[in-house]
Length: 360
Ligand code: PMP
Picture 1 (tube, rainbow, N blue to C red):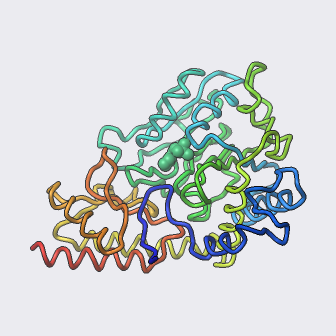
Picture 2: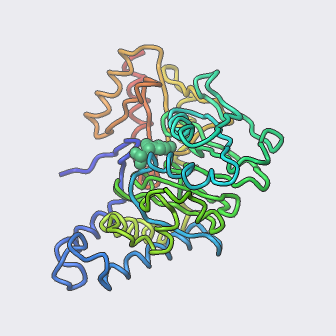
Picture 3: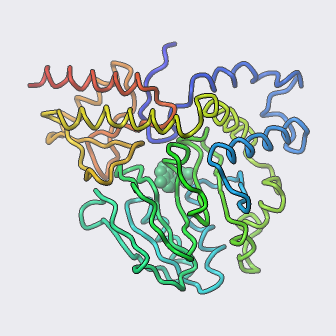
């Protein structure tokens, strides 16, 4: 069966080489006579997998000493609660930036645990831009500042990471982790659901500065306390073993391409091709302000819902899958994560041009 170009926002495309490697090893992993899915999480073979996965992630992201990497479950959504449960210990207050649906969910959840202030928001203009955040806006007594670095639904991203001074910066990086170089030392905590740039759904990656571990209250459930996972090397309970194995394969693939630096170049090129096509288009346009555009999720709209529906349907018949926009934005959305090859973006642009010619 032919593979398609899948523009889904997540779960999304995985590199073909990774899937083929997994296929090759699925029944009998390294002569164990078992699949990775069947290996004990305490076995030597699995210990090697999780150790290597962490080592590769540290290398790819240049994670400095003094940070722990956790491979856990619950998705980014569970982090919306886990972050405040763990970090509001000192002053019971935090500052959040509201840049879209996922930020709103994070804010709503955090409010259950302390005093949450929204210091900047782009809700006034349908979240089509990233609001300015500077140090003067931040409460120096806040336990942390929370941002969503890439807004999967709205298609916006920070071009620059805000400077929060001594207040730890916490970031939901679910939809742009590993897509461009970032300076991890600017963050107190980074979290991401795996199902976009890391691997299959079911795995959540947390990168946390060590001084932020151990701040959870006494009554914090063990599974929600970063300390539990940090002290046990993510093996307190059964971690998502197959997801971690797949993540390791994705990290190896990324490294073989030249790491994040090279990946970022390709991602910039892919996004530029698509944004350029939208600038040129007489039918479609990007609703996002130029200074806030995501490299990963690119929504676009026409002024007719019928035309949008026809586009999505015809695109599908050409092997361009899952282009329907999120219900809150409408139109289309092309998610072009790391695993989307440049040929996929070129095929989409060619199809857009043909579509325009036919509908003019
Ligand atoms: N944050 C962002 C930016 C997301 O894109 C998503 C999922 N698409 C989530 C949080 C929620 O992630 P999960 O489904 O892993 O809980």
